[in-house]
Length: 134
Image (cartoon, rainbow, N blue to C red):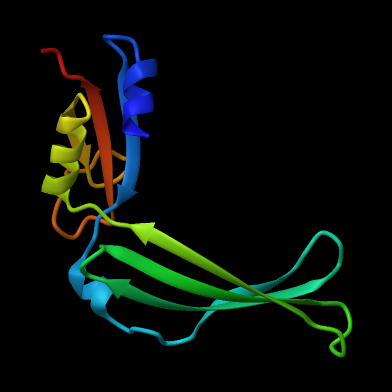
């Protein structure tokens, strides 16, 4: 993905994106506990609910989710779907190296969209990059 962005970016262009800031204590907490993801009525009048389980694999730096979704109009006919989802985490120094080796220089890293300073407990890493000139 970074290679494709680099190829399409003008020499003076800016590439900005956000990703989650991995906090080990949060990632390691509450493994494989079922949590409520909410209930709602969709635009077709079906009742919907979702629960999920999550786990984190430190070696692969992947956070795995398994969502169990239910949809029904009549409680005797509930349709259930299972949806796996995975997030790959990059730690700040690792992310900066990944950008560098893909031809970018990290100009700014913020802790949120309001441009607050990036800190260890920031929820996000908001990155502003430019092409690295050789």
